[in-house]
Amino acid sequence: MRDDRVEVRKCAGEIADGVAIVSQHVLVAGGGIVGCLTAMELVARGCQVTIVERNVIASQTSGESSWAGAGIVFPLLPWMYSEHVNRLTSYGAASYGAICQRLLNETGIDPQLIVSGFLLLPEFDRAAALAWCEQNQLPAQAVHASAFGVQSLSGEEALWLPTVSQIRPPCLMHALRAWLEQNNVRLLEHTELEPLREIAELREWRTTSGEMLQADQFIVTSGAWSFDLLKQVASKLQVKPMRGQIVLYKPERQLQQVVYREGFYLVPRRDGYLLAGSTLEDVGFDASVTSTVREEICAKAEAIMPDLKGLPVIKHWSGLRPGTPDNLPVIAPHPQVQNLYLNTGHFRYGLTMAPASARLVAAMVCGETPWTDAAPFALPG
Ligand SMILES: Cc1cc2nc3c(=O)[nH]c(=O)nc-3n(C[C@H](O)[C@H](O)[C@H](O)COP(=O)(O)OP(=O)(O)OC[C@H]3O[C@@H](n4cnc5c(N)ncnc54)[C@H](O)[C@@H]3O)c2cc1C
Image 1 (cartoon, helix red, strand yellow):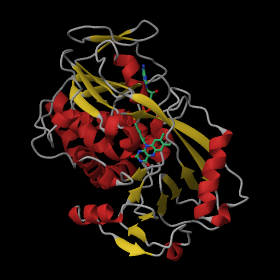
Image 2: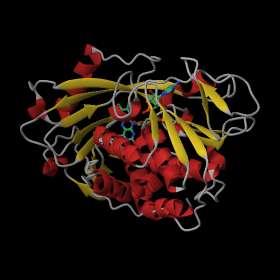
Image 3: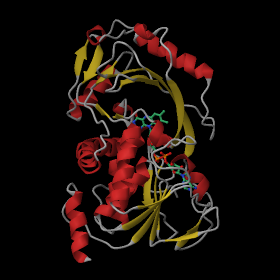
Image 4: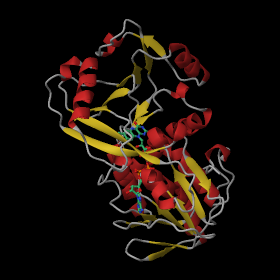
């Protein structure tokens, strides 16, 4: 038994020295990117893990955000966010190289992490952007958009950030799912947890079919649905769905880099597809797509890349982000309910932040010293 656990730890590779190897059963509520990476961190610490997912992990059924995202591993305009948000996104972005290599080596599935760079078209706060890049040692260069084959509506120069990367979310989710299965994580799919009732200590959680699921510790990673699940025990948790729609093209001439202008982006994939999006819509749990938004997205895409005009839209989808004030997730033990932890509310940058928040919550559950001060991510009192 002891040897097995040491072996798991060795496999973790990137887990820092001093990680405690703890044998306990942890139930993770929600199988999106946050839940899956949290499970991966827990496995590295010797935990027995069950992920409970009401749909199917690595699929998109009713607006799950992780499948739907654009996969830019960067917080778009980091100078607009707090140091706490940027701490998570920077740590997360720096972690993906090792995670994706490991997933590829061990599952054969490539999450398609590419350093494609990020071209920021005007208008933007140039002074703030340059100051942030300098302070954070992010290479940045003033360029003409035309050199990248795109149109700028302004005479001002664009900003080229060559080290920014992207991932293909459905591939990442498939690789994670395969890795978790290989590492004996129990994936309890088509299983929906009931909202939690007021209690002092959590030992078991009831499903909507009446089954009681027992564990030593419980972590809520239920994305946009987290408040519904927790409102009786965490009435101040501010997580609400924020819909985003994306349109897919297959252009004849492909871009080589992510292009961003005023809340809108184009993301090229390796196999020639091009994503255009997205929106930020406060429409509750409605995960449908609308023709009005499709037209708006197409108009914005064509303004940047006129050769998209007349091309068919190959696919159009939406996802429900777990929206939170200031993009700040909650990564914390519940202050009153023993054995309950939260890792939720990653809003616009959950893919980028997930490796960081997964490691933080796993450290809390296993009684380790966390890699960063967790106080800014506490549940509002
Ligand atoms: C259009 C769009 C573009 C985006 N682009 C980017 C980007 O470029 N970069 C970036 O970093 N981030 C991006 N994001 C944000 C990112 O996708 C999210 O922050 C992240 O996916 C949130 O992950 P999650 O695991 O918390 O949520 P989810 O992926 O939604 O997972 C939560 C899971 O919990 C399950 N669940 C809910 N309730 C229950 C229950 N009662 N019982 C059991 N299971 C339950 C759900 O079925 C779901 O699978 C984008 C999001 C969208 C929508």
